[in-house]
Image (tube, rainbow, N blue to C red; front, side, top):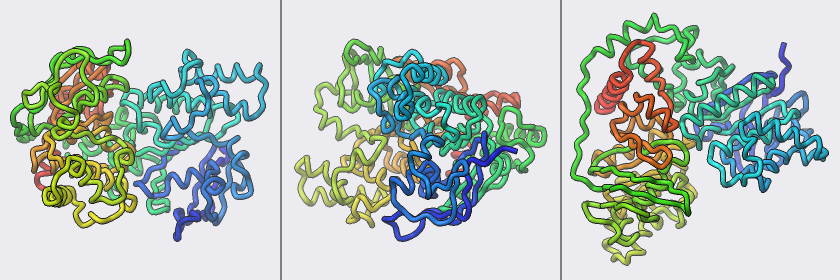
Length: 568
């Protein structure tokens, strides 16, 4: 029998700065060589739980421990963070916060240097770790100049040396494009199996993690363990939507067809699940003639005509052309570094084209100042904390109008209207720091909306958010689009978002536009998927297994979802 690596017994934790406990009566054992997925909505206690495993709680973040937690037989409250670091390695969501070396090689070597390992012994270990993650050719590179996926690999290499038994991954997929996310899941799986490591993964993207086998899923809510068992049992239980976790797309599609689930149906493996008992209902659902959704669009609001752009000598955008009409919902998709964010900066006027032209309502925007462009096109950054500069919600929303010298009456009228649109009017005098992450996202959107732009660009609007906040923000944006005709562009790696909330995908790869079509056509085109580092969604896989046309099946799924929303 495998030995226990993590043993929680009647464990609780309360931060020094809080009046109530964050973790309550935790009883959980994780065994050598297991791969465990830790799920739960934001604030459920997931991060606190793993920080108790790696020693950050209570050694870096002070608090009171009750009960017992043993790591490899060592009682953590009697240990030190140094002693725990020899057993537990953590790969943070923000790789930049983890780097300490001036080069990739130095960073991978950091833990070995702390052990005073002789250089002759250290170099082979660094080489081996870099080869394990496929970064052996980057040992002399500066970590901060790497792509998001490469940074994740370096962070992983730094913690997989022989002396670490337990590896913790905190949202490892958050910054990665779909294909790189698959690679990361593959890499974690390979290291776990080849080196018999124990792995704990915190991740909101359940379907992406289930791309490779997971031994157990632990579902948390309000600092307690709600479920602790195999993935198939959890998928059949109905607990996921109850606790705000996004279900895999194929599970959702099968539910729409009226399929009933049981824990012994291999539900977590879309590739090998036995579909015999579901096939009749899925075929009947597919044959039903749903009315196709045709978005009501207005005139052209934005056009890029043979746009190119360079950073120094490197050309990052090459002859990009597309047109966007009023009321569209569009996804800019493609791998990290493909040019999506650069294109967004060009549209907003933050950067200007090296060659080619951009037109706003038919007017060449080179005649407009960045301030004038900002009144027509708004940009919402991925992290709301990078945009918020005022102490109170109302002050933040009115700032753009104050800077433009508008009168008090004009400001009051516009701010009141915008706050009501965004569901923030009752909180207008609250401190920005007193509201949730999702509400802060709304504040940043409101601060853009107050200028009444025709187009809003959102960079990864749902990254790192649980399904409750994801749905809250996306439904709000849907309402803005539907009720006010605002054109919305999403820069996203999230194929769920593209399928469920957009009508069209503009696909970038290696600085070129390689596809511009309806979402269901793009995500059914293997050549485009391969070039853009996307991945076949589970709807595609389910369709192929049922001998359906993937394009028709995904289109059908979208039409059914829209019908469901309209009848809510």
